[in-house]
Amino acid sequence: MPDLRSFMPSSWGIAVTAGWTVFLVIVGYAIFIPLVADVDLSSVDFSRAGLPPGEGGPFGTDAAGHDLFIRVAEGIRISLVISLVTAISSTLLGMSLGLTAGMLGGWVDRSIMRFVDALNALPHLLVGVLIVSLFRGSVTAIILSLVLTHWTSIARTVRAQVLGLRHAEFVQAAWLGGMSHWQIIRHHMAPAALGQAMVGLILLVPHTIWHESTLSFLGLGLPAHQASLGTLLADAQGALLLGQWWMLLFPSLLLILVTLAVAMIGADLKDRLLGAQGSLR
Image 1 (cartoon, one colour):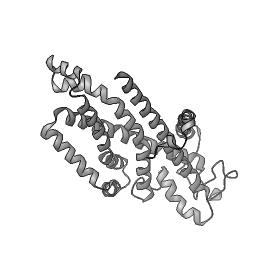
Image 2: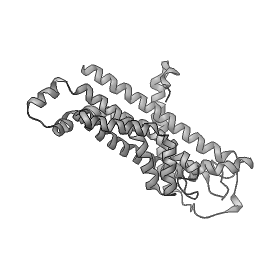
Image 3: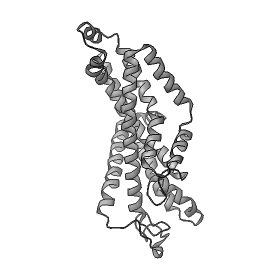
Image 4: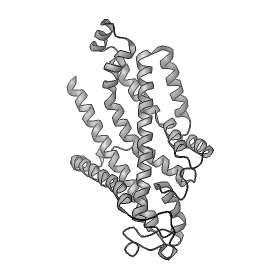
């Protein structure tokens, strides 16, 4: 992911504030609009199909007459839930294996790292397509395919953090005090690596949103009737031929805004973490 600070060095603080604002507004929109809107998105009203913004609501309507303002909010909510569950699960798995590899070392470290290398050598999208195609339309399969291909970066980061701390004075003191490997991991290594893992978790959110959207766009993720950013973009393919540009514009715009906002938030958290670690040294 490109370093956004290189494009706006003199106004990075404003950009971060804007990123938080945009992200919170989009999350609020995704949570509350489907709750307050008394609309049945499973029904079809062809008399309102393909209406442009204004006449058909803020975002217009789709080919089935659904209000896109509501359907896009529902799609973002589903995509965010999938991406958050995936990011949290990937972080927990990656952190556990990274701590284990870095702390135990030896054949355990080599085995885990060779498995990481093997997974990284495979195209992530191809692995996701393979798994999801076996359980088409299953949210669980989508999450499992994303977790399987996204925990490795967290594991590498946490392992590197642990390797840098293994010979620290407080760790040596813990050894001399009779603490076991797992006690040192629990009381020292895990808290020290948590900050880096949290940054990785934040940065995984937009990445997994894009992967879920790609799978759904290809028709392998969520079923077509269930709104997500991917299924909305897939619906927009045919609509563009009919001049219904709004069906592509609004899901794409919100997908880009979420990605940029989370990228700014993640970069800012990384700066704060590195600054805090520098001050401790």
